[in-house]
Image 1 (cartoon, helix red, strand yellow):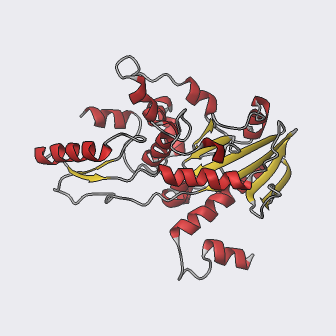
Image 2 (cartoon, rainbow, N blue to C red):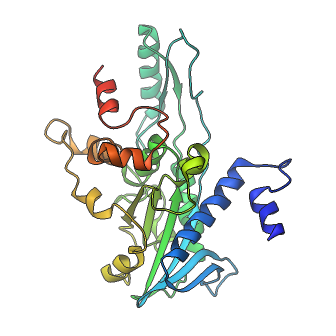
Image 3 (spheres, one colour):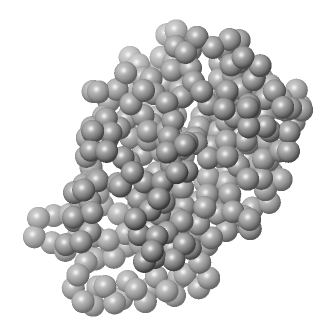
Length: 308
């Protein structure tokens, strides 16, 4: 126990503290703790399920007939712009692409020039992190069993930050050339063993709301997405049973009807669906539950701010 506390959580010696490593370890422990509390069968941590290598999944468990292998990733979300501005100065606007956009450098450069010449804001060009998510998928894929059958479910759990970060990872899945689109930026055969991706705001809890966090997932926003390129032996019952241990928003998200659909083309709305779902599909009480510390306005306040 002492060795684990020191190597993974930098306790009691904090002299070599690393936030990225801490968030990864804290996310793994939180997910494992939550699953363990659900009284699942065959619970195990750091279990090898792929006989072709020595890589371990973070959590393995069984729900009825479904054997689940789950890997937790806490990808880098380092800020590319200062989080706040000095009072009396211009706001800082970060621009990133939603997916792979042809000639995006020129387009973003032109937009940056227009905005800054108007005096509206200072513009910084952000970084598209779709390759980081691609690496997460490939890494998890290598840990899952190549012999996965109808009785297996393989889950990649992504521990993300605040709403904007969650939206960026979603865009990396579903924006043009997103990893879960019909023309992904990387060959889908290399992550076909990943059946489901659960996108969460778990990293946000460890970074910004630790005082209210119970190291479980009851107050963590969880939205699962099935991999359209998943293996053919992945069946609906396995997905339903394997995900039943999580308080997720799969059904509500898929049933969400964006109020802007009559005025905005689908290709524009689709990359923003998660952002709109959070701000318009969740109640104010749910926003308080899942985002107790507001880093910027959400819900009605966000919509009003956008209008202004």
